[in-house]
Image: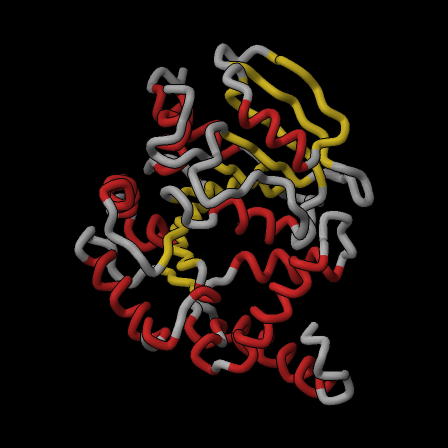
Length: 302
């Protein structure tokens, strides 16, 4: 009876037990690094240039202690291969394969439980880096008014490019429909704060400039979160004793952690759009870390 494609799509989303988190960004905003930081492992290819050309759906599954597995699909939705141990080198190979369009990956997403609802992190290509015309349609559906997906829009302090403006226009059009409920499903992450220098100015002023920029696109009172995805990822890799961690990674991470700890301006939790209960929880955890810090040698910032 559901003859309208929009209504049918909305119905399928509503009855689904998957909670979709769509990650969008323009080139080199650190999208794949942020996804890796959330996973606590280096899975998604990340480089300075554009590197995501396919759609990857990462679904939380009951695979504690097991590697991610994946199904790889071509442009005609044809199953190309099944992979029982998905890792960074395999993802690099698949991303470079012109025949690959979509990867469905299944594994443990560490910060959620899949008892009732399964989180699905969807990593999408940037506006100019998709190799399949259907990718834009998938992204539009996830951004669209009938979607219940949470949208994570990643940007940096250097904003306002043509690509950024074009993608933000699509986001703003989606946010304009449905009132507050629609707006609340969009989260704006301002990444790479660990790269900022004193001359870049105060964090609060930078975020005010970004709010003004978003306002020019009709986006008022955004859910804004400053972030440092690369140090977050590397800290987790070091803590998990990941095999890819080398001396350079450790040295770079120690320098970044000391920088973030030393500069009050870079204590990013103070600037995030958080409910009071969550802010209090983070502050309590920070108090515990600070008290333990006094008992640890200062050559180890972890």
